[in-house]
Length: 97
Image (cartoon, rainbow, N blue to C red; front, side, top):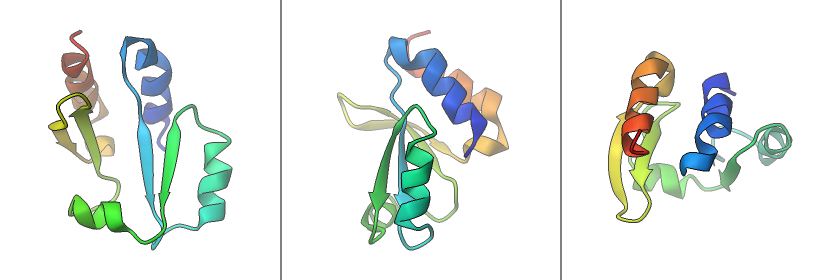
């Protein structure tokens, strides 16, 4: 698990951030995700068939989205481990600083 996801959830939850980790069941076991869910402060959705991955046309792992839940608009998309500071700036922008 990427430690910056845990840090962001802990740091920005009270400002409205909610991380939802979607696990592709074609790549990881349900038991692995059950074990992970006990260790992280955010929600995990186990997508057994990979339907969500297909719907979002995920081509690389890990892919992340910053979304405005009210509108459903994607505000940022990418691989967070490539540049965590840039992702954090996008988070802050989405949260209204």
